[in-house]
Amino acid sequence: MEERIVIAGFGGQGVMALGQLLTYSGMTEDKKVSWLPSYGPEMRGGTANCNVIISSDAVGSPVVIDSTSAIVMNRPSLEKFEDSVVPEGRLFINSSLIDRKTTRDDIEVYYIPANEIANEIGNPRVANMVMLGAFLEATKAVEVDTILNKAFTAVFGENRVNLLPINKEALERGAELVKEQKKAIL
Image (cartoon, rainbow, N blue to C red):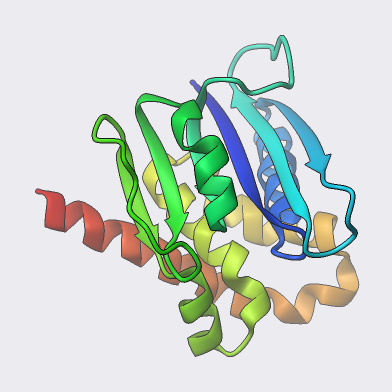
């Protein structure tokens, strides 16, 4: 098993946190992992992406060139990483902010209105967790319980444990969308 993931968006969208949650969860589940962040020159609002590898075998390089999955939070990220997904890979598109469909027909594509769902839940900052829930439902790369019970406090700290319920709801909503989209395909 090996997931090579690109997670991309603007700074402030929780791209790095999403990558850290996946990486920490993979470590906790005794998988081999790597996390490689990449930032634009701006502090917030600039480009941000990270490469995450979760594998049952040793990771040779943290750089993801051919991704098995890409999670894109904005249109510039779709433009940059859409073609990096291998055939039969997965592309998760934040359809709240991306106004076009993919040009690929050789991959699984999930359109997730992450910002809209986050606003419905009551906190626009959980859009990344909606996308994470969608990703986990489609890939099963790590367990949702590991994210919630171990990685969340390791990444965000004990002082944010009060945010677990809203983040759990965001994960569940993202997962539901993937289930619905898979049913529509069948």
